[in-house]
Length: 327
Ligand SMILES: Cc1cc2nc3c(=O)[nH]c(=O)nc-3n(C[C@H](O)[C@H](O)[C@H](O)COP(=O)(O)O)c2cc1C
Image 1 (spheres, rainbow, N blue to C red):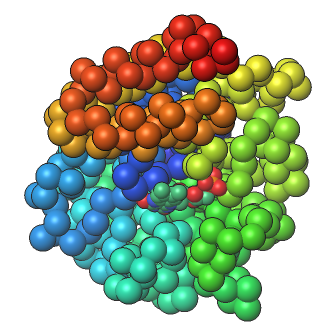
Image 2: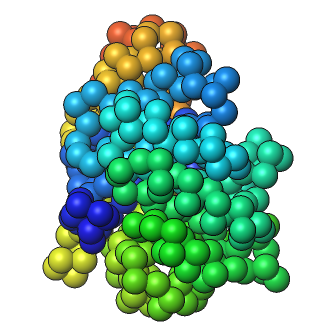
């Protein structure tokens, strides 16, 4: 799958997830098989550009190419400015968020709320495409609601404005995260445009990825929640698409080493106090499939010290812990 000058191979994309897909998680996902990752959404409101949160979200040192950054907002000129700022800070692809259902975003008519105003969508896309000389991509839902499902019209607008790839999450804004993603609208979008289409929503395994790719004809898949605590999913999907063989779950030792490296990255990126807090949710995700995690979790949830957090995780994944708790 080509996005402007960049070939995304394999065509497996880590979804932008605010509060999750920081540099540490993006690097890990790339190392384990994602062909592209998208940074957490950054606001186009200039008053928020210099906060610590925004600064960290623009942190791209040593990231794999291409670096894709997502912007959100509703004002074309501010969006254009924000795109330029991000390109100055290293973005090589600018993704525009018209998919987020969060109240914080929709109250100001940004995110998926924009899908209701097609002329404004066109003005935003025109302004951002004109502002930067890197590829601009767009992420949408299928529409505002079941009765306002306008993804095909939005896709055509995007293509006409010079957007280089489109991601479609197979839910409407009204669906939020309820029910199951539907892929018929994504298939209709793919039929309607020539730019690459990336399908998103509820893709959590190689067999599912293959079914959805076949059903929609999409050029790539984007994975969000299924990668939480499971960055190996990219390698597993790639293997399944190439060979039809399902990869086994990673060995406990592999999980131990990967999680420890991930935690060290988080501690370095955010500093000790915040790093330990951010790390907690990741630890919980890595452990969620294990039935012996409860005792461990109740202890580690209160740890404030980075070294202690590493030691507890190390112990939990050791053969000694398994032996003791199996006994
Ligand atoms: C915690 C979380 C944060 C998210 N943040 C963003 C975001 O910043 N921008 C965006 O476009 N979508 C965001 N999303 C939506 C995902 O990118 C994706 O479209 C959605 O989770 C559906 O894909 P999935 O079923 O593979 O998770 C977020 C989702 C989650 C769960």
